[in-house]
Image (tube, rainbow, N blue to C red; front, side, top):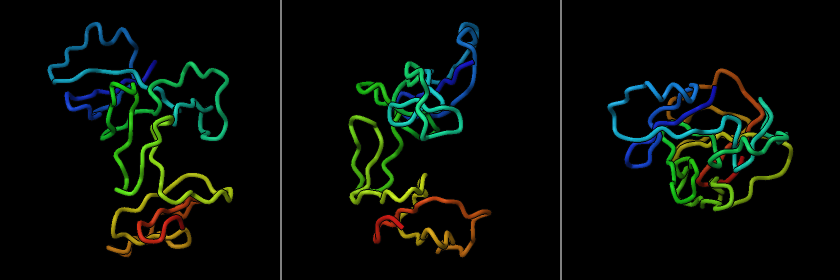
Amino acid sequence: MAHYAKVNPNGIVENVIVAEAEFFNTYVDSSAGIWIKTSYNTRGGVHYEPNSYTTPSADQSKALRMNYAGIGMTYDEAKDAFIDPQPFPSWTLNEDTCLWVAPIAEPDDGKHGRRISGEGHERTHDDFRDAATGDAPARICDERAWCPTRGWN
């Protein structure tokens, strides 16, 4: 089984499915766009062991199209890469990894993962409450948050 992304004529991923390659021999898809194979566990051009973004897998031939596709991502045909939407105007695209980079480097303190807050939201590492609603998340996890006015929390 493999993962495939449906990319519309504007280059936007509309769907991601798991299927055998032979599935497309008989599948009738009347919507515009193309299906492109994507690589699960791939981020920044590196394929990682299952359930890990820290241990690269021994077989890097599995690292297709820079990043695993997700709905709303863009497929850049020239780069042959799936790219997340730009999270904030100040972030720039790393052309080598096709990942967005904050204008301030994320601290290297052992925390992994990122929770990117939307413009106007106030979230910190200690308090992930949504400023607009006051809602707390179901769980607090060891993640870092980006605030457009304060940088990394």
